[in-house]
Amino acid sequence: MMVLKNKWKNRFILILFMVGFVFFACKEETDLYFNGDITVIKSFDNDTLLSPVKVELEDIYDGSVLAYDSLLFFTSHKYSDCWMYVFSVNSGKHIASLCPKGQGPNDYLSCKNSQQFIRENGELKLWVRDNAKSARLLNITKSIETGATVCDAIIPMDWNKYFVYPATTLFFLKDGYILGQNQCEEQYSKGKEYIPRKFYLYKDSLGNKVKEYKLFNRPVILKDDKYDVLSGMFYANHSYIHPDQTKVAIAMQRVAQITILDVKSGKQVGYRMDDT
Image (tube, rainbow, N blue to C red):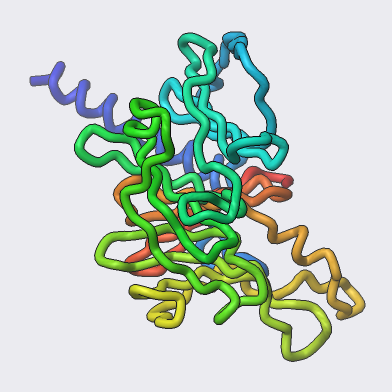
């Protein structure tokens, strides 16, 4: 019985130690510029050493790159035939050319994406959109197998009816919902600066806004109460949606911070490195 009590005592002490470490290693605070609770991380328990492996590709590649499993997707305007080249990491070979350039019904004037991959019935798919005012669900698996760009769905998107420029980010959710971030910022009412961009939830079309998520509280204001014209740079971010479509990770480009947005509740929780 004494041994058992000592074990529980040791475990309790260990738990107290861990709680104390977390308490002192991280602190939660309300932020002037960011919505939601911000946890400032001062240190990590463990360091992870990454060992790089060199991958040699056997063809020309250029532009922005996406990685999914053993595939690399390069999107560039410099390709003469298509917007996207797909390579296999395992073989290093160029295995597919997707989204042919042109103005025909099956062509693309441009090719943008929000890195939203989908797995359905064992097939890999990717949402892309172009300046022809449409969003298309590429079937990557069938495209590689057939050697032609295969689309499982095409959604008309009349950008200019609602925005001056196409949205920076669009995620396509279940039941016809669309989660997007507008490229244009609203003008701040008390000055010449702009309110940082929000996320908006639409139903069936961009004309039916059902919810909005305010990510940031205000423009960057200097000590003399002037609005810093670099607010747009400060708030620049990249967003990624979880495969179950319930949460979005918003990574700041110039602040060592990641914010998690709950799509259903709108709750935001941020994690920031200390002294960033």
